[in-house]
Length: 187
Image (tube, rainbow, N blue to C red; front, side):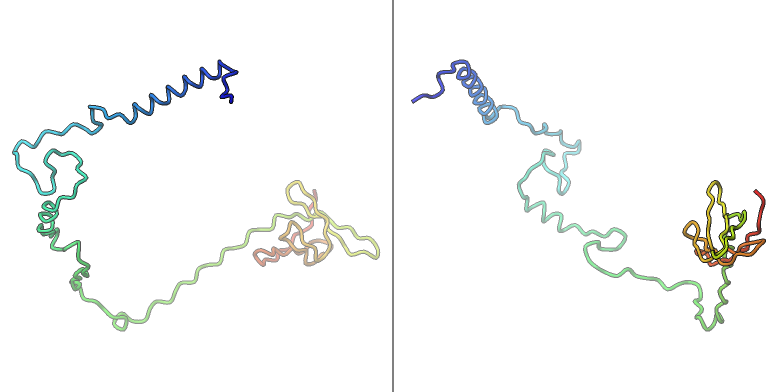
């Protein structure tokens, strides 16, 4: 039976690594003389112990029945109210006279909010094309884009061509339900 002794260099490295791992485990488990807890703080100058205060101010995981009894005997009355009992807050009566709705009279009618004016339609009408046996088409421009549309078409997904005349075109803004005539302009 062979245990891998044919590669002596790998066997030596394995022995070295196992011995280092064993030393680390022993070091972690071996009890040391120094503790990791903080050193105890000095006592107060008066030498009196307050309820709930530990003797040496260190963290102590033990349960202290005596300190629990002392804290239960303390009456918590901050502002005359026990914070550990569910009680309704006392509401004082208002010091000014309260008038009922009948004494105040009828409420004022709400003021109507003015409806905002819809924005103007930015399209410009440059002309129309009229071929026989075809509906009349108009040339509309918005900034650098030119659109060709006939009656009933929708331009820029929100303007509908309602009516085409020789001197103007009527456009409806479908978002604001607003109709606006656009006169023929020279470019």
